[in-house]
Image (tube, rainbow, N blue to C red; front, side):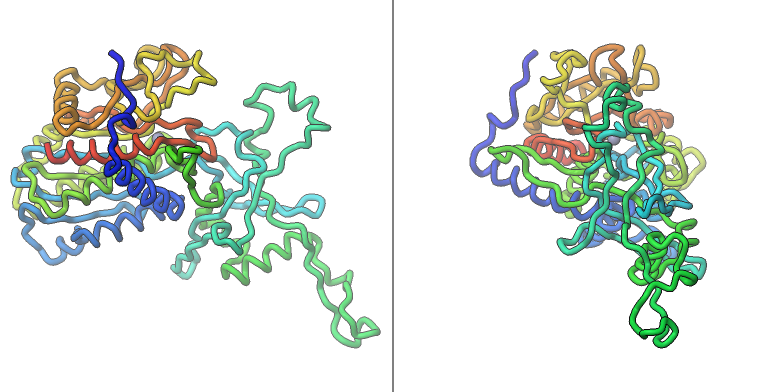
Length: 478
Ligand SMILES: [Zn+2]
């Protein structure tokens, strides 16, 4: 069963659409590099398409009817969009799900230190990374600082052309004989991922007259012991209005600095940070908003969740009750009550749980099984199952549901392919699919193939982004 490259089927008009979507997508992932930023921007786009806050609809006791659209967020880090269809929610909804958190270096709670007149921020990495990929890459600082007075300050340093950036240093090759002999997993230790943030000592000026000649001088008695760290603290205070103690209640993520770009002489691909899983999140969001002006048979739901990269845990991850509770609140406003309505509704849902797939990479062909691999440019990927060591931990979609999805994609002429995550026993991985499946709903893993997954800069094909976007819309309309 050979499937062809989607590129071969594109005429000039389609190619223009492929490029236009890629350009919107490049903007989105360049401007939204944390889960909070993704959720904030997604809410803006949803409101422009007619969505209202669920909290507002609840406060007004509004009766929701087919075609109405509401959004709800979980602590600004996860988002659920619901557009009511003609059928009741108890008959199930068509759901698009993806995650908006990505691997990165999180700044520790007590991070700032000075060593040999260099100042660093200590980090604890988030998600599965190869440590060695994160050294020497220009990094930007994104996050929030929550102060004791209740104010929350947004912080971004390293994205504007005039901004400084940051990096983790690496050992020079000339002295790396021992390091180069280590296993890749040990060559750069996780604890060594310290962000270089300063080298200039704070100079304390003497009062005129005190130092004798009245000129600026270093008053040794007054000079801070760790003068470089002191200078950094001065800058933090001046630029961000924060004290060292404020790191305790901050969430600061170090991410690759700079914009995503077109990749290749033929401009056929995109290279950028956080494409896992914003390539699925953005295309799911666009699909959900594309049907905003239609009243569909089934309700449409788009969920963008946090914490997938560390096990979907916490109040903003897929395992929280946020999704179920929000569904229940919307049902109540739609006048659908009764003790079993929620359970019936959730069990009757159909979901595309979208996350990136491992794209076949000829440089590492031995870990793939070619006829069950995802190829860049071959369209939206469906994984009947993921998991590791005998499908362990996977949601294995039932054949009847896979047939439904095939039918929907074929009727809409969406290019798609099926794949597994690599050769049997080469490794493995999981997604959020098994979590909503606990309600009894049909869920299948789908998504976009990526090269260099979880590296600072990941690669996707514009054709796959385009087919994903079309496939998601077709799924909502089915
Ligand atoms: Zn992912």
